[in-house]
Length: 238
Ligand code: PXP
Image (cartoon, rainbow, N blue to C red):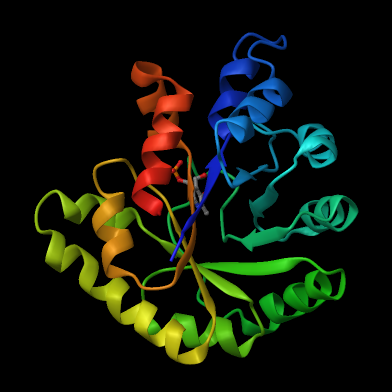
């Protein structure tokens, strides 16, 4: 089964913002990334707009030909944005305002009422919903019970343990995917995936629908170029 590659372009916006002008041009980069074969584009606007700005999201939503996945904490501003631009998918992430990057999945049991309401709102507008979770079968079941279409497995722990003991690194993810497949909820994954560790993850996690990759893919592209790197990911993902 093919796994779709969604390229997270936050880092492109960070680079642009560092000079206060429009180089690199985010819209042009996104068009090129799609041309090189990406199956989707992921953006993660944060309340302080330190990388992707809300205005970027508006512009991108008009030009993206593949799938747009918008990630973030469903605070009021975020919900207003996604209900306006109606991306293909919204991934709910419990990111705190001062976090450098996402550092945990949702507790889908503790926050079931809050998340359930947001999911209902998004689904009623035809937006596919995904909930970012740690690899814990209880959290997967929680996401299923509040009506999410998919989960996104937080792969930080896999990626870091992979270098030491890959069988141990995958085991919780394997159990979680088994639970997701039993329930019939879709599986996405992301965080710290790269060209070295993604093949084993793909091999062990059946029905992996989508991965979203930013930091490593951009770093790898500094050496090898987007076109080459994207085609290497695509070859691994089937
Ligand atoms: N998924 C979520 C929820 C994220 O916050 C991020 C990072 O913005 C990613 C996936 C992609 O992680 P990485 O940049 O390490 O590939």
